[in-house]
Amino acid sequence: MNRKPKNIRRYVSVIIRIIASIGLFAVLIIVNLKNLKSIPELLKSLNIGFVLIGILFYFFGIALESPRWHSLLTAHKIFVPQAYLLGSVLIGFFYSTLLPTTVGGDAYRGIDMHRTFKIPVNENVLAIYLGRFLGIISGIMFLIISFCLGMYKHLNKSLVVGFLIIFPIVIFIIVITVIPKKFKIDILFGKIKFLKRFSRSILEFSNILDSYKHKGKVLIISFAYSILGNFCTFISFYFISLALKIKISFLSYLFIVPTTWTISNIPVTLGGIGIRESTLVLLLKEFGVSAGSALTFSLIVLIINILIAISGGLIYIIRNTAYKHKKEI
Image (cartoon, rainbow, N blue to C red; front, top):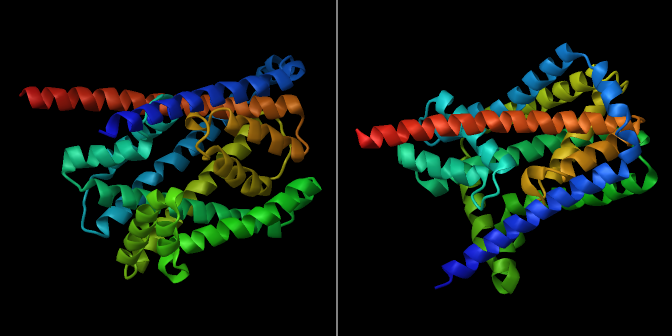
């Protein structure tokens, strides 16, 4: 009875996110209209070799989700070939980045593993979420390191104050998510009507963490993959900046990348499109990059995202065709 209204809400949510993506991207272009003239000149002098290195490391940053996922699954004696997991990661990226659908990339990965390997959806999705959680922790770690190294000096005072306010709040949210029972969060969420729907998810996530309590080696390895994935993206951004002759330090990306990824993961746009580019332009300008170069940088990152998403789409077509052929046989 309630399924239809829920589906309508989901589709409305997707439409709103598409409109938000288009709107934010349009605003970014309109605000930077005068800087569009400099893009052809910047592209003419672009170092293609550095861009290709940037694309390669960007891909590595995404692909490292595969061994992290594999590590978390094997801890519960779930064995899936790494090559298959990599394909699922890229298809998930395709779903999250380009498809206007109510099924997100992580949801697809859960459904795909269940369909192909009969892995319980909840157990797999929670392992995926734990991987995401470790990625968030590593991102926050790099943000703190960047602040300690003085990256805040490049920001205006209002942004610094904003970060100093948000940091403790985010860390507190992470702590109560990890140990909700200690803070009686399960009881609190149960009493407040609009928070009830999150109560079960938080407790399930807490339980999955408990199941890894005595698997410290797995968590360390998975966290190392998260750190390495972040580092690959730092290297990618650094080479894109070298390709555009942008002169900012490698350490700057320890702040720029986690901040951009955190903001672009807020579910207000489709695949972070619009909000990611706007954030990148804003932060690069804070670090002294010209508006034209910052805009070109953000557009290159957008194109890289689309190219990798398309590769995931191609894998999806090949895999789906093979699956249908197998069923017919």
